[in-house]
Length: 110
Image (cartoon, rainbow, N blue to C red; front, side, top):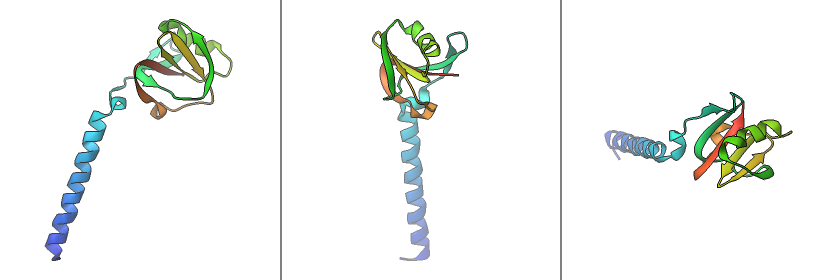
């Protein structure tokens, strides 16, 4: 293959890779999450997300109470609320660990 043809193929592959990456980021629900501050400034939270696993305890609660339950519970570092249940979680978490879960709210202590 001639050098100019190889260059064209390399540029074409790079363009395809960039296009795929842009589509993936734009389609990702995580790119739309806006972390807000709640519970008197003590937690960050976002809608339609989950922090999977690391459950400490499950508590029936209304959504506005979930962050406060985490703040008050020894060992709680983050939480997920879904359909009337607040899942208090342990062992730390990063914002980037959140996964999309329609209708749920996830958060972490500040």
